[in-house]
Length: 209
Image (cartoon, rainbow, N blue to C red; front, top):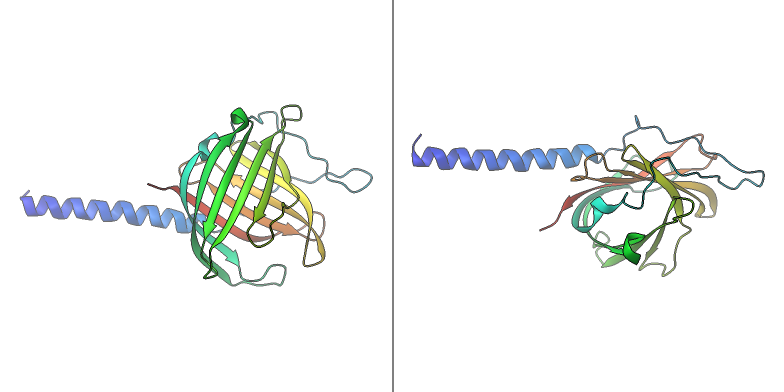
């Protein structure tokens, strides 16, 4: 092979790798409805009853430490039968705290045309073996109710009762870490105690330089 041929082959191989990575990201930005959301359980007062999986561990989020760039998609309108999705990019910096019992994300994007920041705080209860994930952003300045749950087979589901535009909902966060190099986060709302769900937000992360 000539030198020019070698350069052309190397360029083609590099473009193939870039295209394959981009294709994998775009394919991941569709909520995987083949993965079942665990059945919900309630106490007599209607509160969620959540138990940790047998394999739940303080190390479940270790793969997420570091800097990431994200491709995001979210529904333009939630709980409004919308089928229009908005795509945008963002970045996350994740650090462990409390000797690994907790971790914290700093999230940033400019999707609305103005700087937006969010913080995710995750805490592992060493007694219940459950993770609680708290969220606050620069729009509200307060912590949302935590979603609570655990991982099983590299997939985590975390639930909370909440409200959206005055409507009672249950929210679920899903972390799919089966490929820790391209972890996927997604969110769904239910207005009927988990009988049906609307997926409204998803992102896939890739290591940032």
